[in-house]
Amino acid sequence: MKADADGKLPAARPGSSGEGVSGSESAAGTGLADRVYAYVKARILLGQARPGDVLAGHALAQALAVSRTPVHEALKRLVSEGYLVPRPRVGYAVTPVDLSELRDLFQVRTRLEALSAELAAKAWTDEHMREFEAADRQAQRRHRELRRAAEPLELAHFLNEEHKRFHRMIANVGGNRRLEAIICDLQDETRRFWALLPADQLTGRVFLADEAHRTILAAIATQDPAKARAAVVAHLRDGVQLMLDAVVPENPPPDDIEA
Image (cartoon, rainbow, N blue to C red; front, side):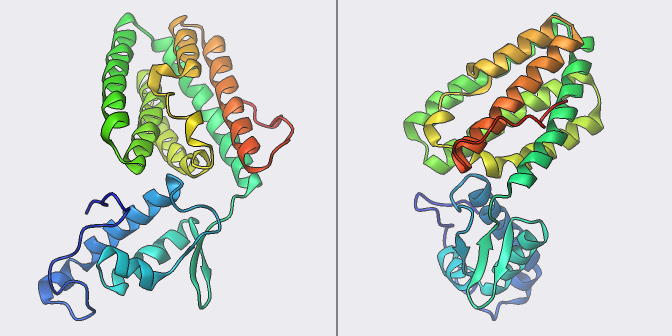
């Protein structure tokens, strides 16, 4: 199920948009709810649905050409995960930005990604640098293609995935699979905050085109764990400050975001 240029999903097969569905369609209901969930969650994470925006189940069902049942299942799941809050007689609202949540998230991310960078520095080889350079060439090529032809939502998704891939590759070098999985989960949670930034702050910063990423990789390549840790901490502190500036201008630096 893929959204079209207007942000809608393609129309369902005849008979699938009403409450009375056939047995085979009923059996596929859970899968349909999963797809609606993924679509709505992507819009939240990529800033298409902003904090405080109200999502009405009946309007979503109509826009996505599905019944209300899978839509309500998807929205309730997003409530349970903290992305939405119920609004009686109105629908569901995208959860407002909570600065304490931002602080908590980055305190954890900073410590874990600093550890990830330390482990990567200890395990680093020239082959790892070649892998990052190859990944960067691929990312830049795809970025050029998307900037020419892609819809904004697709481009935003690509930028977020490449940022996530950079940090995932660092964790992979360190060899701790559990740490890699946790960092990926935290990256997903962070996406909702990144979506608050103006698009022009992120558009050109893909993989090693991001100066901070180059600095981190250079520090890891020295095989000095302390330098690697310091580079990651500086990167994440700068990221927190960008988000604070976007949400609440004139915030003081995030002194409690340390490793």
